Length: 430
Image (tube, rainbow, N blue to C red; front, side, top):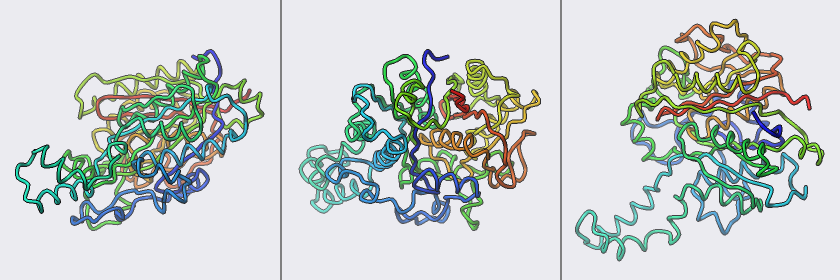
């Protein structure tokens, strides 16, 4: 597929189960969930009281530039921290790579307005006796002074990539992709293409999202996608591929990979974690809110990716599936996987990390890519938590992490709007 071989030389994460790759991977292998009571804001309804939040994250501890923090939304802060980790992990600090040969591409999600900050502005209007629900003059005179002057900068999608690029002096190609739950996978795939065709030697790529907010929670509740079970332990709620799945547990996080051409990585003596063998994308071309029941887009993306990677389904050892515990998406994903892996005698172990991480939206497939790379190096496939009655007869990993010789791993991404993407990673024989 590529003119230059593309390898992974660094990883960085900020997740609900750990703020670095070692802790993150240990949690996945141990089956430790990041779901718990919402801490970010008060939740008056028990059904909206749990999520998979990043714990103990502060801008100071993460090393964010103090003067810029007020201009960075939470998803930009998480991405900045993960990118800094990946940069250090790849040994790029002091490596002397020309800034113009370093790029950064991020997949981002929906930017949620800070209702507390907006609430102060509208409360000021009420106290001042301003009339009219949408009177811009009154808002500008009375409400706007309650807002941070550079408030808008927290909500511009491309600024997550911009802040990290500035800090790392990455002056090469920079881009932001907003394809919902598939954005992280698209970002990594497009970054690989940049490296492969010689537009950059090093590109940091991944996804970031932070939708554990009052508006985000209410929005997904109204759409019927959010799990709202009560009277249960939150860690038992997210159940991808289970007949009793009732919706996703909303999560947040960021995952970043450092992609580099093989020859460039070798020339600087970098540690090589894996090779990115192929990338493909597709779309259902159907309803924006309901996936094709057969999962056609995901099937097409996987099939094309395997052809490009010169792999058969039988040769795949691990599949990180994009099942978020939303019944329609889970069943569509299972249908696609059944047609690719279920009839071929495949030995691939199929897992779904959203059972532990919640649905981290634009970050989800990027975190799966980090997990896939670690699986290749560690020889284990994490298990799907809370899977009791599978919706399909597939080789799901259940009952604990599976030890396996993982030589190739497929990461799938599938989301609302019909978007789908797939990446294939393998060990780098050099």
